[in-house]
Length: 128
Image (cartoon, rainbow, N blue to C red; front, side, top):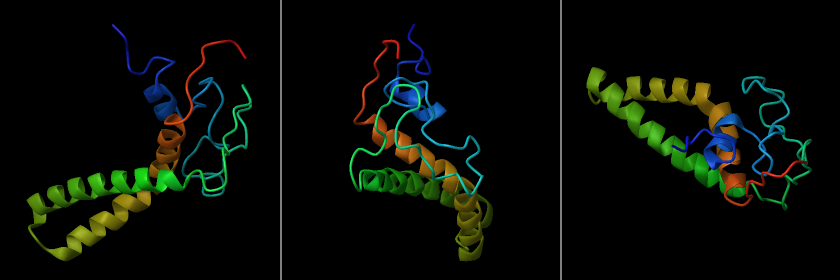
């Protein structure tokens, strides 16, 4: 049986934030997404295989659409959960949204970029 988290799959690359081509090099300079100095910093190229992470100017603008879709789904889930406990009150919803999105911003940012670059780069199992 083929595990979706096995090296060589897009899901592996996205969840581990690895280079989509070799799945060895890190997509981001810092490991900790909550290090506010490094959470958005990416190397220009993969340190292992040399894959160019800066494909063209504005390449990651598409990742904003991935991020938008992700935050929309999360907002709906948060709204449903809050509605079950507090009804239609606006203040608990706003507080929940602010807290959830403040905590998830670095993770959503990184995963959106990983998803976006994985749409355009294929895995190559050869040695680098």
